[in-house]
Image 1: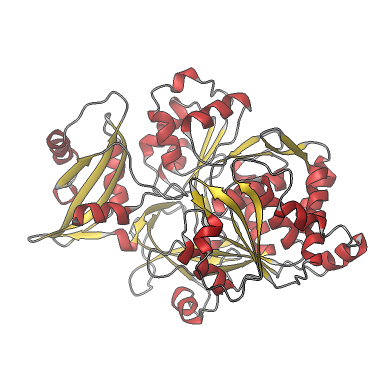
Image 2: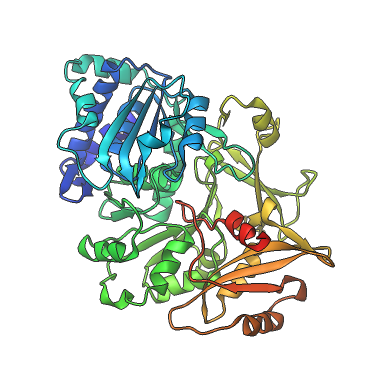
Length: 517
């Protein structure tokens, strides 16, 4: 990481690296601030191999704290901004983080108060990056932290930076915890940088891009495919504090945003906005989506209605530094619309049955991955690591997919989301895709619900496009005409919105709770 930031400063110099409100930071200044941050960590007594956590939204101080620590071989632990006190305490205690960088208030939550009654035996100190996330602090704990490093000599910083190797641990990212407690995923400097050199080059990120980073920094999409990739390519980082659709469209217009990645819900929200035509979104050039199954119809609408020049789909997970497969710039439109691309160079992908046997092209099965992008393991959890990574280094993703003869991957669903209707396997993403082809439907989410006769049946939650009219009975009739009987939802709920997490993924646990209640 220190070499990457320094190299970008050499290459891009006074070009703007980051703009946040009235604050502008060039690539040269970013490198200087990185060194200042690193000096502060030395003054604080941290050493190579120690761990620090950041629990904050997308603000520039997040990046400065991260790259300063990582320049010394200190491991970053990003913390989900939606987590509450016990969840954060779990991550801090498992990682044994010595310092926590956070904010006083964000989205109505007082972060220090959430941790006030938690037992944190390893945490030595918390540093507020800002009192309130939406305001910059003229004076504050972060500035005091930086000031304490002013007595550290440049030679001391250089010596510590020189010790860092590509095999040092860059970060410990936590899984979403959908099956049990979240697990800490350990990855290194070298593998992450190689992954996102490849990712950013493949999607076509350029130094003249203005990159609006909506995806949260605690997630690989906002951090590694976000600001790290922007630094690698010399693009302008435009952090978004929290997702507000009108503010985002206004910023696309004012900052002439060209790069806008995100989960499918981001684009669905843009397309559904009744006042979209009041904003000039013509600067948009490049979209990269993933993090959830992508309806083909959505990709078509992104091109035709939002006028994206390039739409790329990709697939990855925390355990693979965020990326497994990706579309290529010269792939035909139907490949980009209908798949998540093929494996990155140097990465292998297999589709296997329940016994780990390879399946033929076109057959759905679990996706296994092997390559430089696969994590080092789960933190202090050799049992879970052994369950997930085979002796010959294949990572079992838990995702269901189909691969064609050319190696292009279509992500069908999560194994845990699949349900069985009268002996037939049903994949929610497939049904969602079909529902979104209906002219009245903007978004759809499907879950399995218990049924006395069939075992389980499909239940659909749908959000209509602006001005559209549709009732449940009519939609069920349409489904009977357009999909196999066992896939037809037995219950349909038309709703104003779908519950999503900070990464834009639909929270199907909440939908299941609605049905069970």
